[in-house]
Image 1: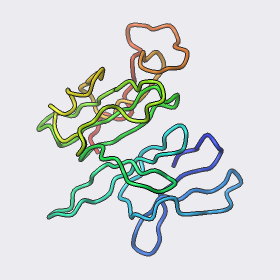
Image 2: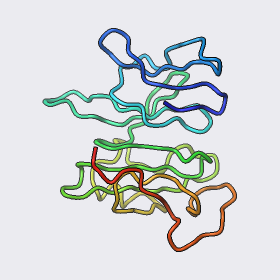
Image 3: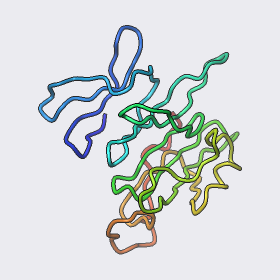
Image 4: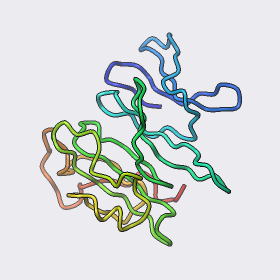
Length: 178
């Protein structure tokens, strides 16, 4: 679940046996489906509420979760990564990709600054699939931790930055792999 800048609440809800991305107004009313594609997980909403990052199950045996960003007003998705999480920083100044299972024995989070007006870091057309793809993202920082998220003092955002201490570049949300 995520609160958008408009006050709308975005969440994953069920319709029959499938899950979809929905939103409701600030008063909890006006429930409406945001995406017509069934989703496996909702991870983030862009700060301008124009994009939603969701996992969809890619065909195959077994099906594999693939993270894509869908424009909330319709259109073609952007391929982000496989077996990962994608988050936008609240100030829109950086994006975060946590890679799981794409690097044997290792979990890493990529913190990527976004240039002014950009919604996504520069990614390969098919998204990120391995450590080489992660390391090739221009200007990105690779942190060998699980699900690192934006935090005070991180020098990647566009907004005002608090004074940096030696330890406040990021914080861990959860060290246990999901």
